[in-house]
Amino acid sequence: MIRNILFIILSVFIIEVNAQTITNYTTVDGLMSDFVECIAVDIYDNIWFGTSLGVQMYDGVNWTSYNSANFGLSTNSIKVLKATSNGDVYVGTDFGASKFDGSSWIAFNTNSQIKSIDEGFSGDVWLGTNQGVQHFDGAVSTYYSAPDLHWSGVNGTAIDSNGDKWFSSPLGGITHFDGVNFTTYDTSDGLLSIYTTDIIVDNQDRKWVGTASGMSVLNSSNTSFTQYTMMYLMPPPDTLNPVVDIAIDSWGRIWTSIYVGYLAEGGVAYWNGSVWSDFHISDGLAGQNVKGLAIDSENNVWVATTNGVSRISALPSAVNAVENIMFSIFPNPTSDLIYLNNNGEYINEVKIYDQSGSLVYQAHSFDANYIDFSCFAKGMYCIDIQLTKTNICKKIIVN
Image (cartoon, rainbow, N blue to C red; front, side):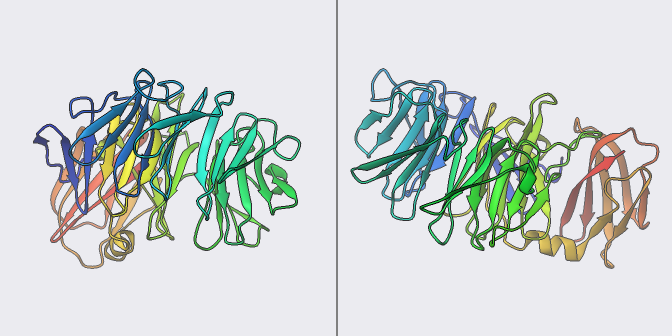
């Protein structure tokens, strides 16, 4: 989507899009590899990147690299990153985990394939593996596996306000552990898919579960699911929204990365409590294959992709509410007309771009309340509406 795009040729590629700026980082800027597998933010707002060449830390100015040749990493191929509240940084690989305490790396659990690393309320650490989950609480280590957990292992751990643990499994739905009993939730209970990818708990005790078919949200009483399957708009006829990662910012907004491998199509979407909005490469993201998300103390969203890293600057908490009050576009998807409800705002110009970024429609001093899309080929388009004081940009699906 092209909307008030400002190209600045510096060492960093920057795109300004209305209220937020997307800044991209690649090997040109200091990344050790453009293929970034995972990402984390530590307590000092340093950004950590996991690649196939090792781990890298960026403090906003300098880049520091760590690899297995010179440091205590079990391998250079990093799959998982987690920065904990005491300042430690954990990495997970297919050959165990390593912990960095600020001065040295220590490798451990070298016989396990690490799928996830999460932190409990007391600073304890949960390592999801291909066989189960290992809990580290000081000097005490406890391991949970089948039959209490699904045999496919654990790829995410979340903790609710009661201190109960929730585990996502690659092939087995989610499991609730109250300290005594293990309870599994799968498609028979309302989960979208048993192929789960991640899980987080929000400030209302809802469990957001990423699956291969979209997002399932289990309510605070654990009795019913709400489903989201079109957080990120795909080109028709595809609607599949497989979730890769989930994060939550300090405003309570839910961020998720979506990627459909067979389409090579994906991006980032976020939920503001009312609607989903998304970011695509046409908005300035470094790449479509989004591997991970991390959010810093200022609510900047860091996006790891296979083509580099993007930083989406902090969005105002009410950006969508303001936009919705000012303007609405409907219906979407459409096969012919879309209607513009501008609430009396004067429209200076309307531009429509196809998925390749080519301008396919332009009108100045636009005074109609609709646009006829019947002559457009099926697919995804971006409409850029220039008002007196701001721009409104939306994705439109023509089916």
